[in-house]
Image 1 (spheres, rainbow, N blue to C red):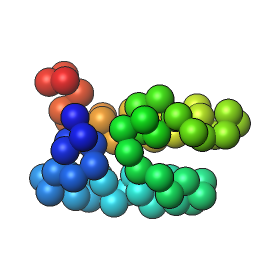
Image 2 (cartoon, helix red, strand yellow):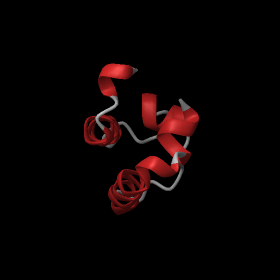
Image 3 (cartoon, helix red, strand yellow):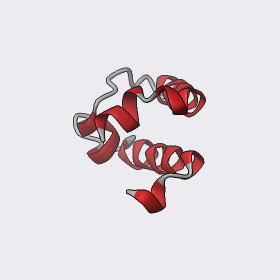
Length: 66
């Protein structure tokens, strides 16, 4: 999961888009707790982080395989 969400070169453009959108929210910590549970994120930003993670999953086309 970590490789897929954070490192897989196959999804470089999707990773870049996700990082850019999170950076716009001043979120610089990119790890599994942040992406999957919005852990350590201010409560007002948690829904946005989870929506961005879901958007990443949809854009990769890998959601049905997970």
